[in-house]
Every structure is written in C-alpha cells, then in structure tokens.
Length: 87
Image 1 (cartoon, rainbow, N blue to C red):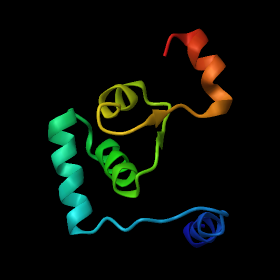
Image 2: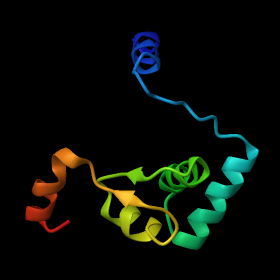
Image 3: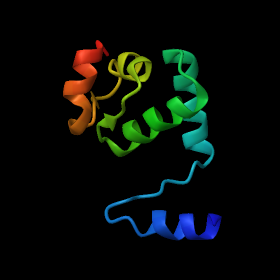
Image 4: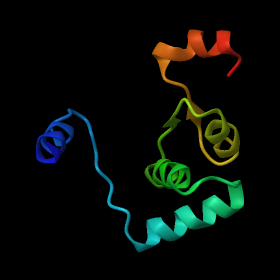
C-alpha cells in the first residue's frame, strides 16, 4: 500500500519533492525557534522561503507566525468557509 501511495504522490503533476538536507534542516530549526513553530511547520516555512514561493496553509498559527518572513495564503477553495469560522 505504501508503494502505491508513493507512486501516486510522485505522479502528481507539478509536485516537487524537496529533500530535507542539513542546510534546510538547520534553517528549519532556526525558524522553529525564531517563529515559535512546531518542527514540521517550520520545515514547510523553510522550504517556501528557500524556493521563494508562497506558503499555502489552513493552519492559522502557522499563517500568523510565518507571515513576517514569507507570503502566506489560504487555499482558494476554503477561504469563504474559514472566514465564516473566524480563522
């Protein structure tokens, strides 16, 4: 099942897998401390910063804390629902 899932993920058009090497890991750790982010959240922010692309997330805490460093957006499809929920 894992092999099928990996094959599916690797077949997604436009998907770019980014290895977490030592420099990216270090940048993630620094951002976790600086922005008070959880580990995985910091990795996503570090990748977006490294690639100079906006971070798209539904995580309100991640959006709030990362916006001082990078552009952060909500997915288009959920903006109206999130606005109604006060996120």
